[in-house]
Image 1 (cartoon, rainbow, N blue to C red):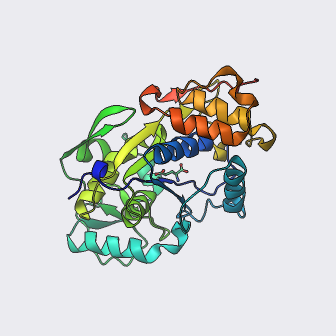
Image 2: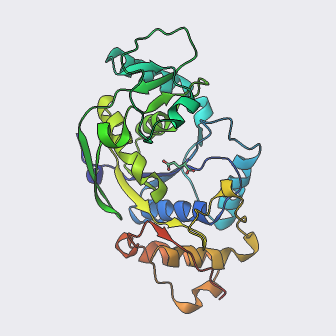
Image 3: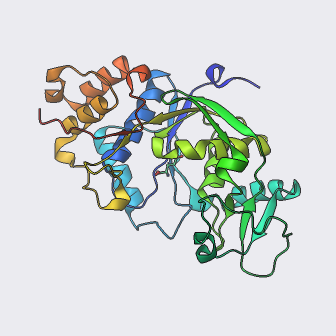
Length: 301
Ligand code: GLU
C-alpha cells in the first residue's frame, strides 16, 4: 500500500449541519483548508448529517454561504451522510460476517448506572438476529492502536480497556458517527484528516474500524479546540455567537493567530484574498500549539 505521503493529498472539512459557523468551526475549516492548499491537494466538504435528529433545516446552506463569503474553494460534489446509508450498511455487514457485531439491549438508564463510561459488556454474548429493539455494538479487542498526530504527537489507546465495545448502529436505527466517518473518509480517499482536538479520543476507534474493514488509515492532525473563558468548547451547538461576516478579515487573522501563525500587523487591513495568499504561503503546521484547549483572542485590528 502507498503511504499517505506518496499519494495525492486529499483533505476534508466535515461540519455537522446543526447550526451556523462559529469560531471553532472556522478553526477546523481554515486549518484543513490551508493544509490542503500547502500540499497542493484537494479540499472536500462533507455534511455530517448522519444524526438526522440533530440536523437544523437550512444550516447546511448557511455554512456553505459563510464559507463562500470567506473565499474558501472546495473540490467536487458535497457528500451528505444522510445519503450514504447503503455504504454504511455494507460496512456493517462486513463486520457482521466477521462475527464482530452483537445486539445490545441495554437502555441508556441501565448504562448510566455503570461506574465507568466504558460499556460494561453486558450483552457481549448475545447473538444476531435479535427481535427486541437493540443497538449494534462492535466487539473490542485487547489491542493498542498507536498513531502519530501531526500536532498532538504520539497517541496510544487500548481498544478494550479505554474504548470498550462501541456503538455502530444506534437503537433508533441510525448509524453511529464512528462508522460513518470511517466509511466516508475511505470512500473519498482522504489522505489526511484535520479536525478539532475534541475528536482526538475517537481516532483510535476509527483506526480500529479501518483495520477491520481493510481500509487504509489516513494521517491525522488535530487542532486545538477554541474554548470560552470558562473552558467550554465554543461550538455551534452550545449557543455561541455566529461568525460576523462584516469582520471576515479580522476573524481570519484571529484564527491564523489561534493556529500559531504569525501574520504581520497590517495584514488585517488587506483584502481577504491577500490574507489567504499570505496564509497559504506561510502556513506551517509545526507552529500550532499542542495544547488541546486554547481561548482565542479576537483581534480588534
Ligand atoms: N462532524 C464533526 C463535527 O462537526 C467533525 C467530524 C470529523 O471531522 O471527523 O464536529
